[in-house]
Image 1 (tube, rainbow, N blue to C red):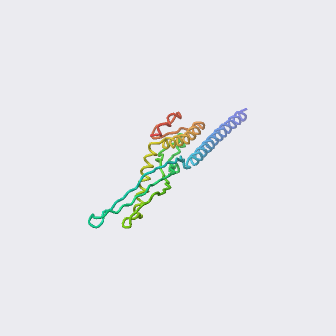
Image 2: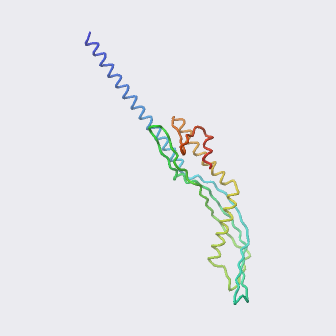
Image 3: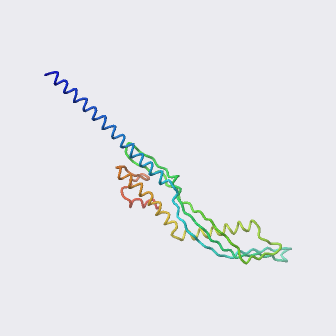
Length: 204
């Protein structure tokens, strides 16, 4: 009888130990799988988010020079027509994240600033220039700089930046949904993101 009781207790201990070991192993595997899924999602989000727009600018470039002790004046001018492709992008390959496995938390440490790229196609019409005041490299560089400045002003007045932020929020919302579905927490600047509406803070 005693041998039976001892055997029963011994068997029960083995069962409990095996159950504890297997349960702990499954928990670790589940944590590993979920962290791998989140890491994969972060890598997918790391692609460029690009919003494109097209802008036009027309202006007249003029330049005058006084020659021979201000006796003569030499002029040049041109009608400048610029059609520019503009992209606003977040290079989310620079997105800084950290996985806190112990607390099952994804921490967004840094979101890169948007970058505006301007690709102008410049054409010149009604070009007139005097012999002593011809168009040169400095003039074309000045015109290109002027075009970029004016196009950038138009971009800032348009909804292009707003559209790019919407694309950013859409990508981060996918990350939020995934972390929530796996029982993880998404955190940004010490604030826990509990709803998609809270992602609006990333607009700033």
